[in-house]
Structure formats: structure tokens, C-alpha cells
Length: 369
Image (cartoon, rainbow, N blue to C red):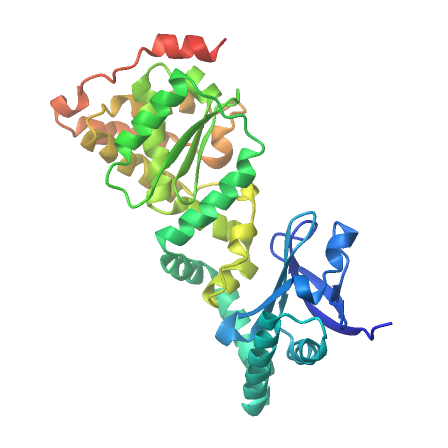
């Protein structure tokens, strides 16, 4: 029987926490052995495993494999575990070429770490970094997000939307066509490639995901009186993407672990956060910004902003009801008064824009079938 060595690390994947679960892993010449949601998934052989460097100064080892239940990742940061893993990678008879290469890189990195000041490298520096992340979480989050490209955000959005879509019933028809056409009109010239969808859901809600994925529920379309009111909601949600409110909320909801990973240059954990993070409750500042910038977008697109004000006022009057919209979009009379004030400052011709070319009575009739 192959001799087992123990290492410790953080595990991501089916059955583990979204921010990583501390685990103890047995390793041998065969491969890994740990407890997973699917027993088979917890015993991958080296030939089925990918190993790479990651984290701050490439001091971590990232181990990835594909199981029956999904994709798994193990992050190893402890220096003794890294050293143990290096030895095992060197002696395992079934190693692939990429594992051998990774093992050589790990050996070089471990040697450099041990040759530097042991106390600073192993104890003091990590503690200082942890303290900095805790005390400067807000600032570090903002800094990390500013270094995320639109392309990277789009990839995350695609993965999160793929997870979310499993729990949605997306519909087609005149309502979906109207939402897509209005959204395209409002997002012209954006760096994001938007996708607009309508979900068959009676709750009055709409949400925006990082990367430009926007979903409007049929319940919201049924409550609206006209296409201009729907346009106001879409303009508002687009601005949550443009101003990166959705991305900001996603990272903050994930906690310190993901922020630390992003600061250290490791972006792999963010993509596996899951669709639950879209329920992040926007701050009043973000809501006010999305309102005003959305109003500006309506004016630029030649759509009357009155619909936005009227629909949000309608929602404010129903604030005492249990509407899904308020779980992620906190309302206040001040917001609607600010919109009304902003509209009164506009030129009359801007407010009285040409009506949108949709027969909303027909659209609502189809939705209610």
C-alpha cells in the first residue's frame, strides 16, 4: 500500500464553502485522498490532476481536477505542506509532464523562501497582510476591482449567469423582444456586451449581473403601465453594471478570503462564487447613482424619463408590501424626490420625447396568458 503523507489547504468545489473550506489531504504516489461530496471525486490520480503556482509571489500551489460532481480546486499555502507536496510530485511514478514542471518550479520557489528571512517570510509578513486586509477591506476591494478588466468581468458573468439560468424559466415573445430592443438602445457605445432576458416569475423584480447580464421578471412587466416605465428599470439596472455596483457587491458578499485572493493576483476563486451573490443589497449611494445616471441615459437615448420616475414612485407606494425588488434595491422617498427634481430641471422637449413604438396593452395580455 502506498505511503500516505498529510498536507493542509483550502478546498473549493461541490460540497465545500464558496470561500474555501479548510481540509487535511492525504497524498501518495497514486494521487490525492480527501472527503468530497462524491466519494469518487475525492481520490483523483496524479495523471488527472493539474498543478500550478498562484497567490502572492507565486507562493501558493493550486491543484485542480474534474470530478463527477463538478470542478474542484485545492489551494496549498502552508510552507511545510508545499515542501511535502514538492517531494511527492517528484517521486510519484504517474506524474504527467506538466506536474513535473510544476514540481520543479515549486522546488525552486520553496528554496528561495527558506533562503530569505524565515521569521518575516513565514510569520510576520502574512500577519501584517491579514491585518491590512481586515482594516482596509473596503479600500482593497475597490483597488482589486479597479484592476479587473471588462473581459475578465464578462467571463465571471458568463459563469455566474450559467448557474443562475438553471433556476430561471426564460421566456420569449413580444415582452422579451421589447426588453432586448430597449436595452440595446440604452447601452449603445458601452464597453460591455449586454444580454437582456425576461424570466417567467410573478415576483416584481429585476437584477443585473457582472459583465452585462440583465434579467427582468414578468411580474415587473405586468405591474408597469407602459414601455417607458420598463425602460426606466432597464436604464437603472444597466447603470449598476456600468458603475460596477454588481461586481462590487459580488466581491464584498464573498468576504475577506476572495478579496485577499484578488489582491494577491489570484482570480480563480471569484468565478466559482455562484449565483446567490446577485442578491447583494445595493447601498443608497449606489441606488441614487444608478437612478441619476439611468435618467441621463434615457435622455441621451431619446426616451422620456417620466416613466422611470412614475414607476419608481409606484414601487415606493408599495414599499410596505413584500416585493422582491426591495430585497436588493432599498427604496426611499428621497430617491424619488431627487428624480422628480432632476426631471423638472430638464427641457420640456426632452421630457416629452416620442413614445416608444410598443403596444403595451398587447404585451401585457400575452404575459397574463
